[in-house]
Length: 367
Ligand SMILES: *Cc1c(COP(=O)(O)O)cnc(C)c1O
Image (tube, rainbow, N blue to C red):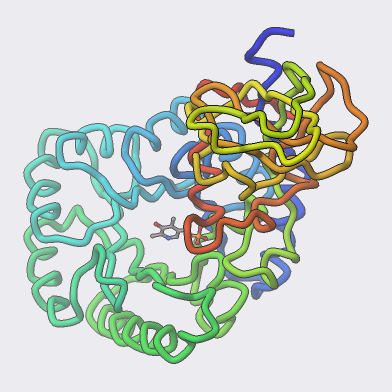
């Protein structure tokens, strides 16, 4: 087996289907689903996942960058694709590939107005992003009039959607804050309904929004992390199935005696005779050093084996004392049977970060 196949990220489309249908079952039948496939579909594969989501019934997809949308179009994806963070430098591609920009500043609207005359398009749909409390990207409620004025300059630009993003939809301590965000968003929605003569889509819910604020479905929801099998708290998480499983094999086994150490800086010191397995993946593959020194346990022949010592660039060591195993045996680092949620890494990272960090040198394999 070559190195690339030893360490691989397995993608389970049945799990994706399960999560998709589960989210759908939480929604009114007329609510549209936007599948978020930014960052290589949360570290998996945006083409495979994007196409499958469309097959499953996702009416829209979303990415962060224009380039990510272009790749989907070149792979034959035809549904509307919302670009959360379009760059002005790439705006020609946005138009040529019929991508939908999220628009949150006048500066972008100006750029769009300047670029449109260079293309043979009659109309371009945009989704206006409204800041309701995340304070990241978005127009303020006080700017709504000025947006309308700006839009009058270029009748080819149509508001296809109005949306906002929730800051803490998975946090039960922040329910009042989330409800205030939803109220502010409703104000913006009403404003545009009053002033525009055509229909547009309203959306605010991310994954946790879908699960916790069904009253805020509006016309569409934007599902990301839940499609990949993770929630923002253990309750949400139990409802879903992991799509990606990071697998590898045991590269070498050795037994060390009391007092011997393992790895750089000698962070692990054996307190008794200890059997150690070396696995061919490390921080260059996306396994952060925060997983080292006992914080995460991988699955070896059905048993949990803690990562010991510091994670290296291309390798890490696990304690397999008492586990029946041999060189070449398969290991699940995390995934279907060994979830990231169970790792002792709270406060330090979140499933979003763990799964999106699996580096591109790890081969993606469909199972
Ligand atoms: C990433 C993202 C989402 C998806 O959020 P999840 O919590 O992964 O469901 C939705 N909307 C916006 C604007 C995003 O950036």
